[in-house]
Image 1 (cartoon, rainbow, N blue to C red):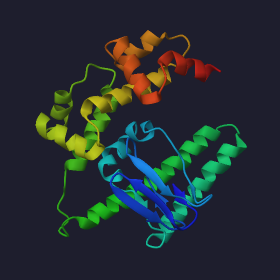
Image 2: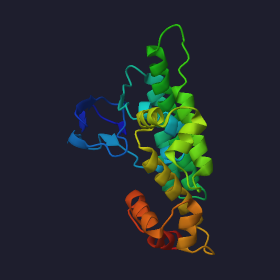
Image 3: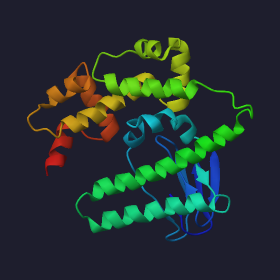
Image 4: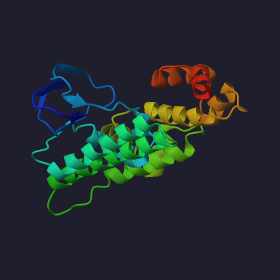
Length: 244
């Protein structure tokens, strides 16, 4: 969200943010939030699916830190906020023009925004670390796990198997994975599978059942429930919308 006028006030979780013109506010998936006061045309926002983060191993492995960031001050970070505002403007331009590949262009600009915020957040995190630059392997564990899950999501994959692949105990893996991704392993795997199923549904030669099993779901009931929870519609409804 880009703040256009001073005095915008939002509650995100238990924290109230009073933002100034040029500031950036982020409300992440499943966060409770409330608009307390916004002047007319005081802010501009972009809403997007959390799968853009969860299906990207780089972002997913850093999401625990990413989701902890809600406010970037234009006064403190003028260069960063200016770049983010520029990409916001690009998205608006691409959307209004509605030219070929406008959706792809919008997603590219959105990824640029997420990349800028992620680099900012991780840089701040690294600055808090011991000045001796002691190596922390946790991020590499999660990055390796996310890559492995992405590559093997269509298989009968278990948390124990992924933990063994990363070389840490299942208990430690479970705690670390949730800390970094803000999701449990089953929820993360389910969303990856739904994302893959969405791509498969674009092929009219495949039945909905084919898509479910090819994506890694063990039953159509589980598939339909997970798909509706993530997208708000059934697989058949999603397919019809894509065909219209």
